Image (cartoon, rainbow, N blue to C red; front, side, top):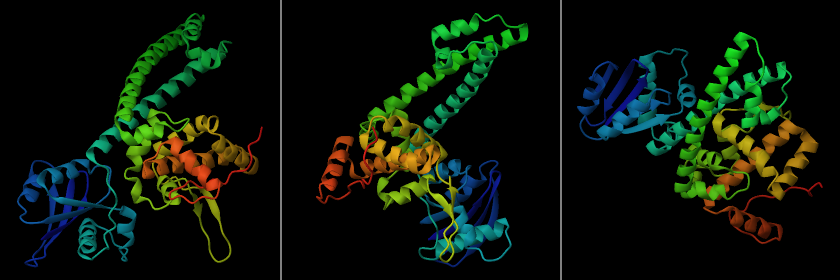
Length: 358
């Protein structure tokens, strides 16, 4: 069996390899130009295990190893670096460190990796989100032009009547040219986003987990699909706290002795899913009585910002429970009713909200 520790970069990779049958060790550097990488790994005989650190430019390498039938383990970069005690870092040492962790039982900090289909759907969601952000910046600019010329339409500016009113404004030459170009670009962005929305909705309707999440009030196709493809296998999380930690919706903590210090959110997880949960929360709060009670209680205790994040975290854990137990919203509420009545049921959500405020 051949075990390969690979320090992967954009233009090259440094390799430390050992053959467990013969004891032979190889240290080399491969350039990513040409076919050197493919030829090296294709020539390896017998079982081969390759270990790398997670990096943004590793997708092509994972696809290559998958094509060649070679097992690849992706490790957590911070945990791999923490295993190095010496204050020396260069490519050969990094490759040797990965190799050492692979050869030691249960030492390599492997992370979960999404499938090719999930990665492709993540690309779809990120593409849509990027165009939405561009549209938002464009809308802010057009709103500024309208307000500077006494046109106060609010959200009505994006209706056909509002856009006609904006087009009818008598503006100086350059401002008029800028308005016309932005309005033309806005129409193109709107068509592009609507096309992506249809694609997201089609994918959400085709996937059983996403359809379950759509039954929760306030959760649309974008949030449902993003929750499924970014969380992945729900059974890899043991508790709701692990889900919140994975998304980065837990506070930073520096506690020593009897003194506890909690800070801002860690924000170490997926920023897009965290954003979508927060946006969906404000829709869900108005439609779900239990979540509404929880949000209003936190609103009094902590203020609007913390209340919104707390409700978003609760919504995200709800969606995870629905995925893990493969239940819809109606069954989720039924289990909550059983819990409040004192009957035990596995996988029940924890309801602890106070009375609703009228």
